[in-house]
Length: 399
Image 1: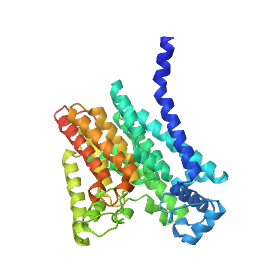
Image 2: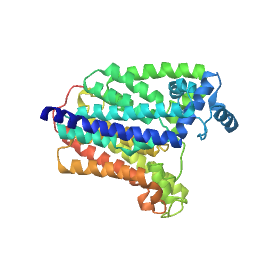
Image 3: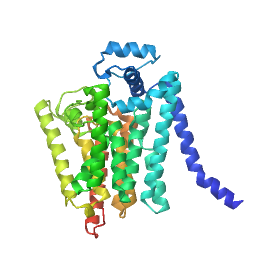
Image 4: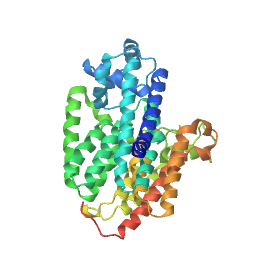
C-alpha cells in the first residue's frame, strides 16, 4: 500500500499542473482571448488560397475574419508562413474548437519544456524547482492567453539545447532552425554557436533556414522573409507601452512623454540614445563574458543564457510574452546554482517577471514599477554572470 501511495504522490504534481493548464485552455477558449491565433488562422486561409497575406488591407482581414467566424483579430500579419501552415489544418474546425486544440498544444509544449529542462540537474530538489519555475512562468501563460506560438518555439529550442550538451551539433542546428522559422526569438542559439565556432550547429542552422526561407519567399512572396530575418523588426520602436519589456521601452518610459506614468524628462533624442547605450553596454558585457571566441571547448551554458537575455533586452520589438524563451536561462541558473546568491537572484528574477505579467495594468501610473519585467531579466543575467565567472575557473569541456 505504501508503495502505491508513493507512486500516486509522485504523479500528483503532474496531474495538478495538467488540470491547471486544462482549466486555462478552457477559459481562453470560452472567452476567445487569443488575438494572435486568429491572425495565424486568417493568414493560413490566405496562404492556402494562394494570396499574399503580407499585402492585405485591414478590410481584407475583416472579410476573412467574418468568413471564418472569428470575433477578434490582430492586424497586420507579421508572422512566419510556417506558423500559419501549422495552424492550417484547424481551418476545417469551428473557430473555438480550433482555438482549444491550438491552446492545448501550446500547453503541452510548456509541460514538456519544463520536464526536459529539469534534466539539467541530477538533484531531485533542483529538478522540481526547474519544473515548477517553468510550468508557472507567466510569459508562457501570457502567450497562451494571446494565442501566441512562443511555447511551440521554446520547446524545439530546449531540445536543441539538450542536444548541444550531448555534442549532437547537426541535430541541434536543425532544431534551432525549426524554432527560428516559427519566431526569431531563438537567434541567440545560432549567434552563440557561431561565436564559439561550433560550425556544424551553425552550418545546419544556416543551410536549413536559408533553404526554407527561399522556398517561402518563392511560394508566398518576399513578405515572408520579414518574419524570418530579425533585422527587419529591429528598427520598429514600440514606444512606452508597458508590455514592451526591453531597453528601448525602458528609455521611452523614462525620457519620453507617455500616458502610462511620469517621465524624468521629455526628450525623444535622449530616449533613443539611452536605449542604444543600454543595449550596446549589455551586448559588450555579454560578449566579454563569452570570451574566448572560436573555442568550442570553452562553451558555457551560462553564457548562452546571458546571450538570450541580452538579445531580448536589446531588440526594440521584444514584448513581454517573448520572455518565454527566458525559461531556458532560468532553468540554467537553477541547475547551476551553488551559492545562496544564485538562488536569491533566480527567485527575484522569477518573481519580478511573473509579477509584471500578472499586475502590469495595476502598475500603470507608477513608472518605477513599469520595468519590473526588465529588472527581472537583468537579475537573471546577473545570476548567470556569477555562474559564468565560476565556470571560467574550471577546466574547459569539449564542445
